[in-house]
Image (cartoon, rainbow over all chains, first blue to last red; front, side, top):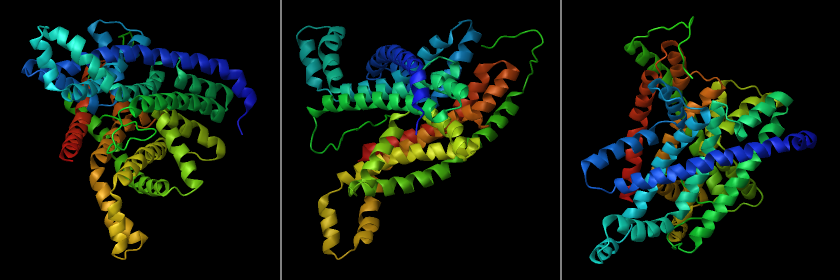
Length: 229
Length: 221
């Protein structure tokens, strides 16, 4: 069905593009994790000065399409005098986008923590920052590892939008090769299999992490990825 | 990159005119919804039932298809449908491509939602319905389905939000909708913030209330 000559001819290109996709995803993922943790902690504060900006940020990100956010960063920021390459724009947009979803996950993890933990460590004389860093956050991250993995899986799929900014990642390469070879089934089939492979690996990983603490009421199966909206 | 160059036709479009043009364009985004939701919910329920009953061969085939759709980025499915299908004699316009791809993804995600709803059902319900002498269809439509729709409502609303946001990606194969129109306006006025802010406001007006509703429904359960 698929023309194997074409597939093998362009396979190195596809793998190069796959690396680019993973690079974008990994960089954005790291920044998103930082943003998400900070915003997630901020969202548990009682102060209006924390809650309102956090609410605007997460509300904006969650109710507008990623494509619009990408355009905002790529076409909007240069007007303010900040010149960005398309790679930088993509990283900023993906980090801000994923960071908002991660902040929701972190907030969920924080609110599920027992209050006694924080009180006990304060009683032991630890400062608020120490309590967070040494006691609370390590436990939270252990708890939310599985949703974080599924969020990363969504991030990898979202990086396909970097194709719009002519970044040579998997989706852009697929289109380029399709236009060059007139073989769309091969050109789109191979990248889709690659995306699917990553998805499978992450889903298995998420399942492995989750297996230890699965409760009987929680119907989480094999590929239990659920998007936080 | 937006740069003012000599010879560029810069054109001022009044704000009210920008808003009305973008508002009209947003209607074509929302026009996807009835089709996509109708197809997605119907096929999603059918696939969920087939997979729940583990009907051999079809069930496994559907499982693989659902996972492939859930594992692929939306954009590459759009490209694949738009650029590959003409080679087997199916030529779809941008709007039709949008309906097909949005329906495929909505079906895949919703089938999983309904399936988890089915699996969460209490077995006693089936047994009680059977004891009352109901046949399979009565059981499914009168007892099971209404309860599943109720328990999965937050996820259905979430899927609506995802569908609305995904309609923007169909602009990348030439669909004239709000995001494409905003880019055209931006290229004329050279002020990206105005155009994209209006677009964002339209999306927020529709999506944010839905997100709140979804959260509230989730909290109630």
